[in-house]
Length: 153
Image (cartoon, rainbow, N blue to C red):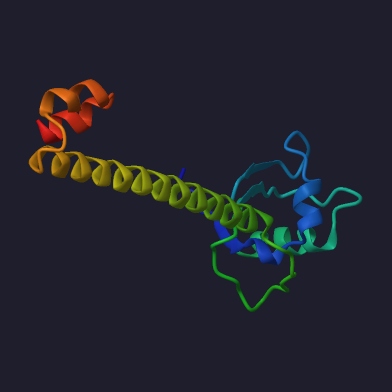
């Protein structure tokens, strides 16, 4: 059997309604990070079913659909009301990305500073050897950083 599903924006349901869905009770649901799948059947509506969910299920039944996929990136339709609710997932994602970028930038700046200091030390030591202020042997005795010795020597 080939079946179709209805894909709608999560804005067509209240946030509280999605949070109140129980995957073990009708209408059966499966939540994922960007939305929820909700089953539709031919039976009536249980007591206490929120009006926004009742409207979605009726909309799906009228189109002979037995599964609703509500997704934050899906299209909105004009036939159904929409509800405002903040996308906390997006706020959290933006915060995480900003924190990671700050960490990367800080680490990059530290590494760049470290490399610049090392390059300056290499140039100073190389100049001292060329000017005859110190011998290469003296340099080897006074420098503990093998990278510097490899660059000069």
